[in-house]
Structures are given as structure tokens and as C-alpha cells.
Amino acid sequence: MTFKINLEELNPGTFFSFDKENPDEGITLRVLNHEALNEISKKTQIRRSEVKGDPPTRFDYMEYREGGQEKEFALTWDYCIIDWKGVVDQNGNEIPCTSENKVKLMSGSVSFSDFVVKCTRKLNEASINQEKVREGN
Image (cartoon, rainbow, N blue to C red; front, side, top):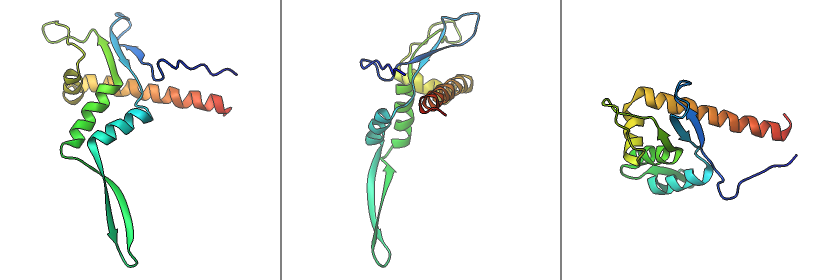
């Protein structure tokens, strides 16, 4: 079996249409891969160490920097949401796909965030299923 990979775009996006009546309107998402997760963690967390007990044992753990949880949320969705088309405000004006708008919609719009989370789950399930096929399970 051949395993074809686009080295120019290792984590491409997948388009999800909002509805069947307007198939060109939707959102392009990608899975949060290991590399992106590490970069986000570096920006939002700090490694701490403590020595406890007798005999002394060193414990390492990660702790959020100040504002780190909010920043992690913003960076995660900024990475995973690549683009959208057909997201409009109450007046019918197109809402641009910016980092600020991604966070605003993911944190404030239940219907938008629910759609994105469902699509992200589908992407993750598809990735797991592809891995099982390659493994022969």
C-alpha cells in the first residue's frame, strides 16, 4: 500500500458545509497536531519543579502562565479554524475570519461552537479510522 503525503502541507484543512442548500458556505478546519500543541503550550505554560517527601523526590509539572488558559483557548481555535465563508452578522454582513472573531464566536456563540466541535470530532474520528486501516485492524 502506498502512503501519499503532501510535504508542502502536512496538516491540510477539511471543508465542512453549513447546510446542503448552500454547499459553498462553511468552515475549513484542521486537527490540532502535536507540533501546534507544543507551540501553544510553550506560549501558555511553564514547567515547575518541587522536591517533596523523605526521601526527597522531585516532581515536575506544568502550570499556566498568567492569562495562559485564555491564551491557550485563543491559540487553539486560531490554529484549528483556517477559514470560513457564509458567517454573517445580524445585518447579513460577512464576518471576517480573524483571530479575534474566531475566539469571539467560539466563546460566545453556542450554535457556532457546537458546529465546530462536532466537525472537529469528525476529523479526529476520521484520523483514527485511517490509522486503524493502515494497521490492518
